[in-house]
Amino acid sequence: MSTTISDYIKAQQPRSAKAKASNTVSVFYRNLEEELDARRADHSLVTLHTREDHTVDFSSNDFLSLASTGLLRMAFFDELARHPNFQLGSTGSRLLDGNNHYIETVERELAEFHGAEAAIIVNSGYEGNGAIFSAIPRPGDVVVYDELIHASVHDGLKECLALTRLSFRHNDVDSFYETLLEVRDSQPQIRQGERSVIISVESVYSMDGDVCPLRELVDAAKEIFPAGNAVFVIDEAHSTGVQGPKGAGLVNALGLEKEIAIRMHTFGKALASTGAVILANDTIRTMLINHARSIIYTTAPSFPMLAGIRAAYTLLKSGMTQPAQDRVQLLVRHFFKHMLSKPIWNKAKEMGVLSIPLSEDWESKDHLTQIIPVWTRQKYNYFLVFHLHFNGFAAYPIDFPVVPKGTSRVRLVFHAANTEAEVEGLAQCIAAWAEEMVDIEESGKGVRIPTAARQAYSVVAAEEVKNGAAANGDKNGEKFDVVVGKGVGNGVSSGIPVSVGNGNGANGFH
Ligand SMILES: Cc1ncc(COP(=O)(O)O)c(C=O)c1O
Image (cartoon, rainbow, N blue to C red; front, side):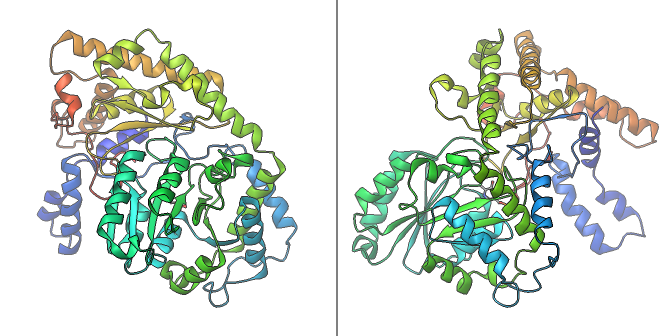
């Protein structure tokens, strides 16, 4: 059985009672175990896992397969060879000794590639969003954001001087329009063009895989604020490398470079490296250097990190990643073609067992994203993931609070190095699971769990019996019983105690 699954299940067993009963565990650790038990109680304790070698990757953010194929490593070694005397660490904050010619050169190159006036490289996208939203909005400004914006923007907003922050419905141009009207009508200084509206969106949403209607949003903002005091900040984490000319991102794809005040590209995903760049003009760059605590109070990016980024951009610029970019498109189309032609597809969709919103009209779309969430009834996403893992496919469930309550899903990610056969196998595996769930629901027996989940829990129970643990097989079986049927899909708790997230931006199985 997948050790990922068995380790995860085992980790959900409560510990604090045992710790309390023991004289050897201090109150400090007992209290922490008690806190962790609160998560174990609803099977939402996060455990770390390493991906098993035998599984096929339909999960990682290595979209272009630059990491798994070693292509980036070769470009990286070339870059190192050009700088044989490199110094590993940057030796200081960017404001002190951490600045150097190399980082400034790489920043200039990145700005030029993306058609921006200035660039500043930061240690991560998380830090980048923190820097932007803590330093740029001024008192009296208003921040308007898509309701599904990344957690790092929310964390940046905690330090933000703009006290009014309003969300609009995800990717909904009408809701965006209404929100801007509300700002205009309630904020005289903004109406008079004395303060700004700062709009936060992502080019591709990480958990939904859908693309921001950026041009429509830009047009709406111009119409409502003709003085130009509505400005956009776009997070291009999931479009970098995979969208636009040579992977330059959505803004470049739409030719909106002059319309967007701030762009952030991250390098931990398609570019298989680490760090991020904020693209803007010189005023924004100077503001960040002067006001962003996450830039000021940290060591500047190291040479190996910068060399990795530069190597990735060498590949982008040369056009070497274009075949990988095209192949992701081809594989996603291949998946839709196979998945939607499965005999069970329509029935499973009608019953609410399975759906893939991004597959609607896929044939007419010019661009498909590499992130394809598969929606299931609430909590079924764990069953599907168990099924996928047992069949050698790595993908993970996504739950509240990473996504809103009642929107659990399995996130599939397609990579250039996936093969057509793997994609067909994945579609077949999902269809087989859907058939089993449909059978279970139609049998009307109420309480039943699918084979993979039963198998997972009985293996863990057997191991526990072997190890003399208190829990027994029946008890474990009970824990995962589920009343299968229509009532489960409406966001109301079904009573399945599989993980439902932990209230802290991470979900249990991850
Ligand atoms: C949309 C988005 N923004 C920012 C980040 C953070 O980027 P990084 O991993 O470089 O910290 C992520 C990564 O999870 C992301 O998905």
